[in-house]
Image 1: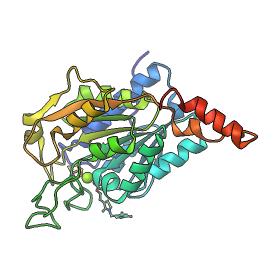
Image 2 (image 1 turned 180 degrees about the vertical axis):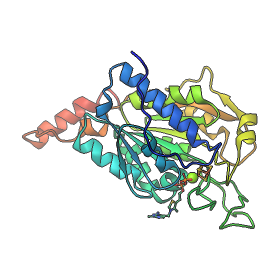
Image 3 (image 1 turned 180 degrees about the horizontal axis):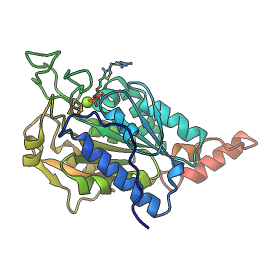
Image 4 (image 1 turned 120 degrees about the horizontal axis):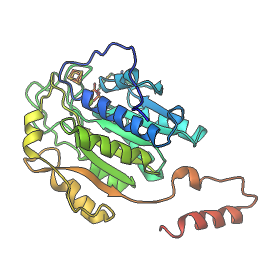
Length: 283
Ligand SMILES: Cc1ncc(C[n+]2csc(CCOP(=O)(O)OP(=O)(O)O)c2C)c(N)n1
Ligand code: SF4
Ligand SMILES: [Mg+2]
């Protein structure tokens, strides 16, 4: 079967050289490959927020929902709960997901709801022209901090692991093949999957050389081990000058939120028994 054409007629308005192009190409390739392997595209829904990243849904010919800034996760969760058979993929910015929407991300991870979140982490507010975000490094000079920030960044992957996410990975916008592989793996994962993409914003925070010098792909990493995953996740803290690991840090099979919800059991005892049955072998 030929690759599926997922292009649209929308005019692309990203800056030339923007790392979002890599995410777009990798997402289209992953969806095309999934379609060829039997995942019907009509069962896929893309959700985005507000920001440069959000335009990605205009450029992929699939069902999509443009939500509001910081609310990609609740929109995606709502779609998933209403129609559990759908594959729901959220595209959010770092300002969007790690700033205004962070509490949604934590609770989605805690619930292990079966959605995939792809974070375009350019470590800057791109659309609003260069203010700092939760992952901008200490001293970041932008439109709102001309003298440099005074805050250390958060490590979102550390937070996701401790919140209960069952799939955690990282890629960069200079590593297309790895991105494709990770996206596919994340979409196929049953449970809450988060992919942090170090997506370069060439206009407000050009980090291509910085990442190219430090990034390396995880090899022989045991992604089933929570503590090994945490060690690798903490190796680079989005601030210090350290090697930056790429690939899948953590992956765990655990019943998803949808499978633990009440299913019209007649008594509380029946409900408890079913929950035990669903969860027992995992906890
Ligand atoms: C509720 C709400 N808060 C703030 C804004 C203003 N706003 C729009 S985009 C944006 C920042 C986008 O940054 P990010 O999520 O990192 O996306 P990027 O543009 O970098 O892809 C902000 C603050 C808004 N539109 N709505
Ligand atoms: S401002 Fe930055 S993130 Fe937005 S399109 Fe341009 S390069 Fe990309
Ligand atoms: Mg951003």
